Amino acid sequence: MQVQVLSRAVSGSMGAIKIVARNRRAFHKYHVMETFDGGLALTGPEVKSLRAGDASLDDGFGRIDGGEVFLWNVHIAPYKQGSLHVEQTPTRRRKILLHKLEIKRLVGKMTTKGLTLIPLEIYFSETGFAKVKLGLAKGKTAPDQRADIKRKDLDRELRRNFSGRHKV
Image 1 (cartoon, helix red, strand yellow):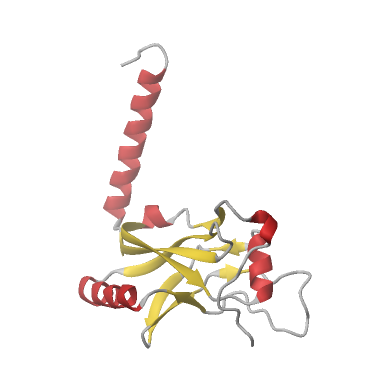
Image 2 (spheres, helix red, strand yellow; image 1 turned 45 degrees about the vertical axis):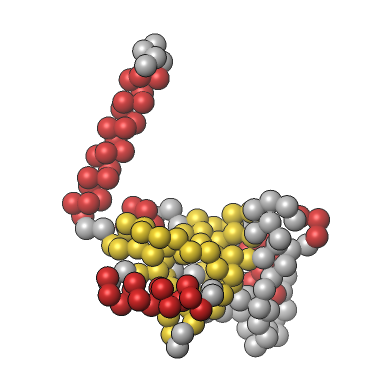
């Protein structure tokens, strides 16, 4: 299988960041301590499928194997107009391109503090490369999740009460 190390966009669509997929449940399930941006090593049909917006980050996670970072369980749908001769596995592991120092920092933090890597979003950069934003996170417990929901409800109630007639 041939892997394209960095994926470039068509020259007409350069200039703006295009977010392809977001992990909306990540901030509900985890305390995100730190974020990292890294490139994705993708095949050609995967890039085209991402441009069409066919990706899901729900069950995805990052893992470090042999000094390299890989993204697991991220579903990128097979490209519909792609070749039938090339196997397109939707949830294969994909390499994340990070600097060695960033990987060493991640290894140190993940082993000592019990943190995990979760994908927060996949996007195309201004230069047209496929990138992933990873979060170094710690799982929330049920009471933490309930406290966050209660805090958000109170904030929403305060904004609703003071938004109309009562300007502060």
